[in-house]
Amino acid sequence: MFYVFYRVLTLSFFILGIFILTVTKSYGTGFETLPKKQFNVLLFTKNEGWHHKSKTNAVKAIEDLANKHFFNLVWHEESHYFNDKYLADVDVVVFLLTTGDILNVEEQKAFERFIKAGKGFVGVHSASDTEYDWPWYQKLVGRAFSIHPVIQTAILSKVDNTRFIGINHMPQQMLWTDEWYEFGPELSNLNYLLTVDEQSYNPHVDWGDNKKGKGMGAFHPISWYQNYDGGRSFYTALGHTSAVYNSEFLTEHIYGGIYWAATGKGLEKK
Image (cartoon, rainbow, N blue to C red; front, side, top):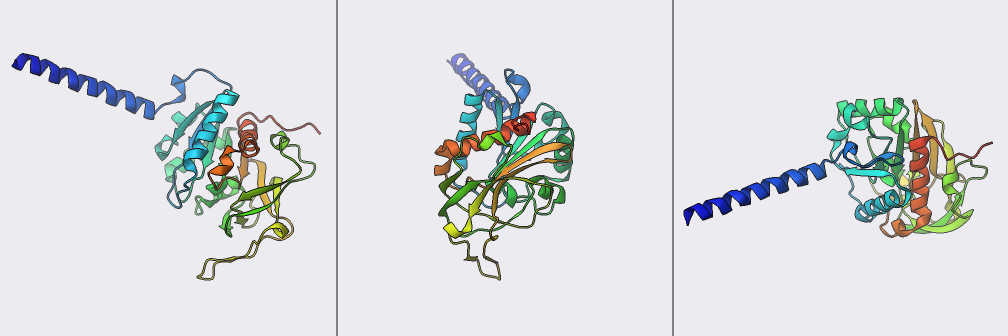
């Protein structure tokens, strides 16, 4: 009887050990275990500030893009993956709804080397509300978030004469409901893609403690791209609410950024 109990107990611990190893391996998946696809994307969603309730739907939307467009996607919230060895297999890093100071000094240096090696970055929404004390990152994004009014519907427009194919699926103008960020000054040489018309919503806001916003005037950028420090960077301020990730206008806009950042392709010839 004791022998049977001992065997069952031993087998149980063995199965538990296999389960733990399997979960750990899955959770820490690297790209070397995945089938070869057109490119590899690291999705990073760490927060040290505001946590967006839309994150779950946003991550699912990016996962659906990976399935639809045949690229590998690994999602992490731990910053220790920002090292030279891990990033060597990555083509583009996506900061999705990140906030606050999320990388330590060594991780920052590894990410800088990643971009300087000719790789790509995509920032979505609050990626501009991230790493305010890291000047290199602020220039990588292009502008820093300042303040926003309440969520409102407004007129979203494409910038004329852009070469960026990743917005060709969008109409010239459309109504869009989102959280409209007001930004600080341009920090690098940006190519603008989308703007919002401040005449179509109320940009004024007062958060107290002398923190006020009144809009950016006639030209209020929402999305842009740039070549930066040897690599490529794309940013869109769209994507606050969970509902907008159900729209292909947003998801294919993000994919246009991922595709260009990963490959350097996706610009119309002059």
